[in-house]
Image (cartoon, rainbow, N blue to C red; front, side, top):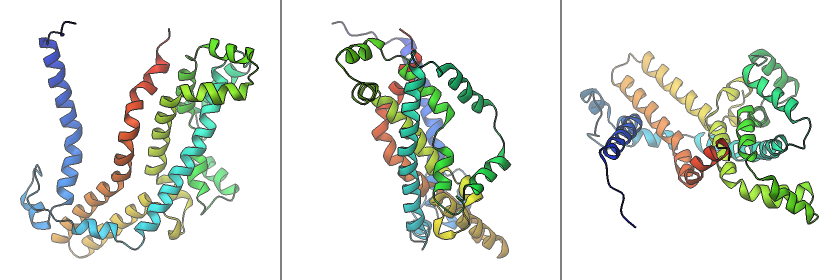
Length: 287
């Protein structure tokens, strides 16, 4: 087999993609450089291209803060439970809506798409959660995001490409709809499940707005909420003390909290990345 000739256009693509990768990576690198700087090096280095010193004292403040381990465990619990619940609701719903013999599918799909375009607003959302007595419970962080309309529509598009002949042959052998779903549809949908798990997991892990609305007990603060509180307290303390080096420490502390909050997602993403493109594109192409 003859090797493909490396053309000028291929060179352009590699250079272009390399520049995009650098542009995407540079903000993360800048955040890391600032987070490992001392106050003096932070003031002297305006570009922050390379760490002049490696100072991890702000990481020590973040990681060994008295409330961080508890908040981290709460975030992990909310993320894991919320993602499992969301997959349990999203995947079967998308499968039902993708089957032509399911008669109400057009009406139900229209209702789901309607919620993507229009919402009741923040006040009705707050009233619903509080009337369900979910204040100061982890369910207030889990249930509101348990079924995303966009994710259901995306999953439906994926499952619409599953050949109907697979189901028909299984039903001829006596398989019920539940057996077809469990033994045929789910194994085929592994890329989709991985992508949905990533979408929901990142959303649950990074969401602190629901915690701001519904969590007043500090023992139930998720990690993002606690880090936000720590940043605000640290910034106010530096402002009250007149700024100077304290202001630089506050900014370094903020960068350290950003890095710490990103680590769990960065550790999980490589295991799901191989399914990411396939899971998003397979349902977008009609044969």
